[in-house]
Image 1 (cartoon, rainbow, N blue to C red):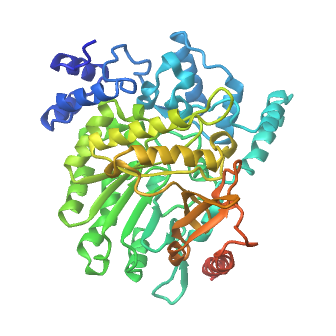
Image 2: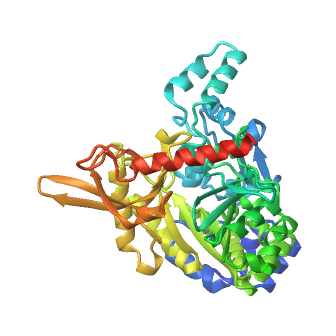
Image 3: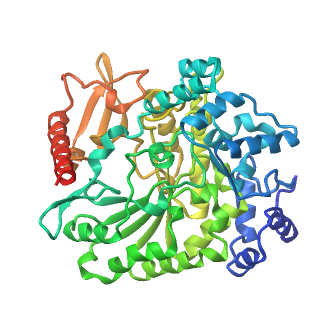
Length: 517
């Protein structure tokens, strides 16, 4: 079968996406979809690619769908095509506890002929079994709307939105009046990188079912929201150890050009901020809304990216790809090429999640080969498009952790195969990690001693960065799914635990003092 893509087929592909005339002109003028790229990708990964699909998309009328109303509208549209996803009341329970959002683009990325096994469907559509069985059964059997509402409200309090004691990551500093000031919309846990949750980045283009920051998206009272840009610059001037500023959310793709310019202009022009080397934007725009990047309205942001690049400051777009199909469509490919042409470094970091990028055999065990191949293929797709494979990491124990996690021991087998089969340049930049209050802990692998098997761990980042200097051993456990819960080897506690408690208490006291001034 001839799987090459001709000029005429490329034109049909572009027509299928219903781009505006302005976007089509940008694609042509900036050479965003060269046939050489499309053909090489198609020949290498036809099993993941949508480049030769011809049927009309199911979703063309709206850009996005949100909440129960949006979910029900999607269900109705699918029914018109003879597609019934089922389990509607259970899926709606998840939406009431968390949220639902999906863009036209991501809906059209899903292979609806086999949606149950589609990674993107698992990523954005609530699934039966996500909410704990006892809660689900109580909800489905409740005899009134009031009873159902109470079950939802009670369960929301159990969803652990700020695992890892994230509230302790809010930085404080002494302001010009000599008072301790809390930066409520920021985190500064590790010396080199400061996180900003800007007031404009509280939303997402679509909702990931495993979201680790669902409080941020759901609108809980204890969100991180940064309104004052000047406050950020004043803090940065006092902390020369910071080299990277990460604007996140929500999704940094919602940041407007004028707001972004407020952040970067002093960083470019003020000598007191010359220690800032990288601006990172945490976003899933390339998965959920890549058409935004290739539209003329995005030109203002691209000029700012180029301005950063021309002033020796790296603009790193931190994306989150979990499966090759997210990448292998013409909108995402064109968006990636447009960003790179304007000096943007693109990296991908994603959790390895059951049902999405980690797969099971019929007996419930992890399918090591299939799971690893997903990431191997993804890593090679990154190489072909010039994306850096930053990291794979373990899910944090928040939200519906039980649905997405698998034992650390089996995930280690998957990661080990990925690491050894990818060329060194195309591998993840670090071993698989999991975040806790102590820091990001990497699982290096197993150690065999006479009569016993152990895990070897190492901090990738820590509340005390000197903890990174040690490799330490913990007991091997076939069932444990959280690195922080692995038991110390020949000790009653890990080497860092006493110091960690002292650090956490000091952080707590500083934040409380700043709030009670």
